[in-house]
Structures are given as structure tokens and as C-alpha cells.
Amino acid sequence: MQYCPKCRVKIHGMKTACPLCQKKLELKEPDQGSFPVFPERKISSVTVMKILTFILAAFWILTWMLEFMIPGSSPVIRICQISAFFIWLDIFVINYYKYNILKTITLEAYVVIVTVLITDILTGWHRWSITWVVPSMLFALMIATLIVSKAAGLHADEFIAYLILNSAAALLQLIFIKLSMNWFPYPAVITVTLYLLLDAGVVIFGFGDLMTAVARRLNL
Image (cartoon, one colour):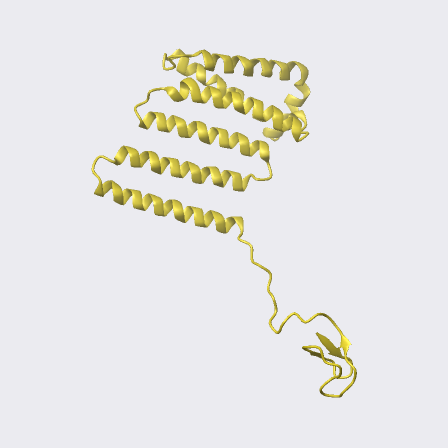
């Protein structure tokens, strides 16, 4: 694009002189066309969640319709609906806590635990969830918490609260063992033992950080 300093107008194309005053033109900037180019609009995270929520609602409506059309399909449809809800919840958690990796991992692990417990109950309560999946998830969560905390350079009082929460969840497994609901308790017992050893180390070697984490959570 060229510019006439006398007429103060921009002229498209490559011309030697201004068509109005015949004055020599200056090269102002490259010709980019007659129409402005607008920047590409990005989809916000809120819009993404609205779209996913609509897909979830549509899925539930369609599955409820299938439930009336196909006799005996209620158990399968219930599992699909619950699974779809937890997938939506999982995406929501990732989207909301995307800047806190440790919190995202912790919440995702608990979403998976709740999902497998509900699935086990709806499929006849064979107790495979409390026997194998829950101990495995809690053990993996313990390892992931330590690795992420070390890699991110978090101070002790920043991840001790997560260890306390996970330890409480691990101790809940003793209830299923006490009620004879866990037919193979060794994975749960091993997980509880590892969490207790970790808690003992935190209390003995990081008591000050533990008190700081508790005071921060209780707003003391």
C-alpha cells in the first residue's frame, strides 16, 4: 500500500504518482487487500464445558428413550449414564484445576475410585473394586504425589495436606476388611501400611511443615 503525503490518502496497488495530485508516492506498507483480516477467535474453556454439558444431556435423553424401547436394558443404560457423568466430571476437574497438577491428579484418582465402586455395585457387587482397584489407585496416587511434588519443587507443607487426605482414604479400607467384605485383604493392608510409614516419616522429620499445612487448611 502506498501513501500520498500531500493528499493524506492511502492508495492500493503499485503506482508511481498520486492519481489526485500527481505527487510522488511513498511506500507506506505492503498491500494486504481491501478487507481487514480479523484474528482467529479462540474457543474459551467455558464454551467447551457448555458444549460437553449439552452432549452429556443429549446422551442421557437418548439413553432414557432407548430404555423405554428396549426392555431389560436398564442396568446397562444406568452404567453408561453414570460413566458418561463421571467422564464429564473428569473433564471439568481437568479444565478447572489445569494450573494445579497435584490437585488434578488427586481429584482424578478419586473420580476413578468412585466410578469403579458404583460400577461394581451396579454389576452385582462382586467386590473386585475394594479388593484390587481401590488399593492399586491409592498406591499409584501415593507414588504420583511424591513424584509430582519432587518434580515441581513443592515445599513440604504444600503437599502434606494431600498425603493426609490420601492416608485417611487408605484407612477407610480397614472398614471393609473388618466387615469381611474384602475377600483378599493383602493389597489393602499393604497400602495402609505404606501410608502409615509415610505418615510416620512426615510427623517425625517434618512436624513443622505438618503444623503449617494444618494451620493453612484450617485458616489458623
